[in-house]
Image (cartoon, rainbow, N blue to C red; front, side):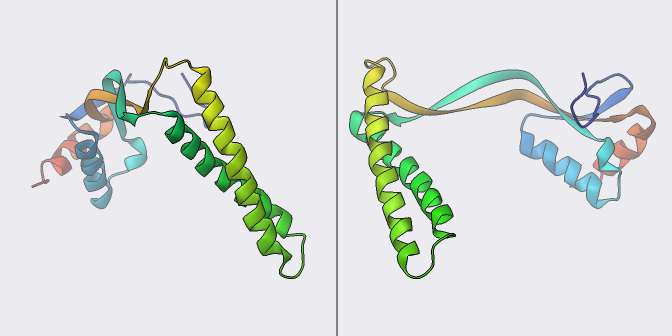
Length: 156
């Protein structure tokens, strides 16, 4: 499988030089290799046994949905006001910024409230989703294996 950048994601011809339970530890190992002058463009961190983890962050109510929508809408309105303000001279640009933020917040609050109501109570919580792996392997091309293992052995 190749990406648009032409990077080949395969394990053929590669050796695992270390396995870590936490991504931060694998990242620290690669950083150590980089500091030692190892060609890190040849290093891969491979996460295995992936799991979707959804961390529930709180109870979602109509009021909280409206407030979240208002916050998002205010930022968007502020952005639109800023863009419109680029074509305005004098102190009117401040009014465009504040007006854009206020209108965006109002529309965002309405949208957030009605979007929450449309779920009919099927999802009364907020959450953050992410992928987690059981372990992370640091791999290098077979030709670089011994040098990489030697450098990683230096980590105290």
